[in-house]
Amino acid sequence: MSENKRSILMRFLSGALPLLLVLYVLSVGPVSGYLITSNGLRDDVSSETLGRIESFYAPVTWAVNNNDFLLSIAVKYVEFWEDIL
Image (tube, rainbow, N blue to C red; front, side, top):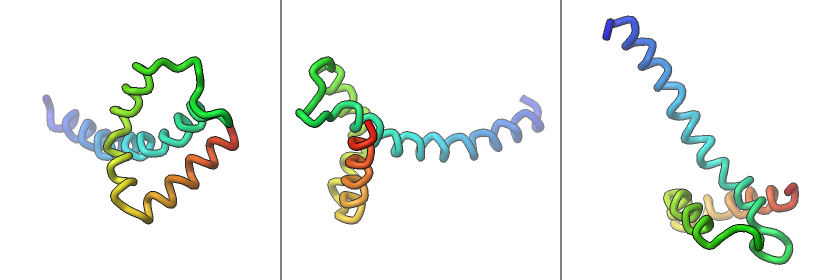
């Protein structure tokens, strides 16, 4: 790989990876807002799907559950999306 292509790839990755991480964390709200209704969890979502979603967001859940400040922010953020959706 030429030096020019390598530098272009490195610049792309240095911008794309942080953006993807931020989008991953922020996607918790819309997903929760979709899954949680006023009556509890949606009926049309299988337990297998819920398990996969829980596994996918396990790092975020762990971080939020181990930090009171993040927990308060996360609760407000999820409630915001529940009200919208």
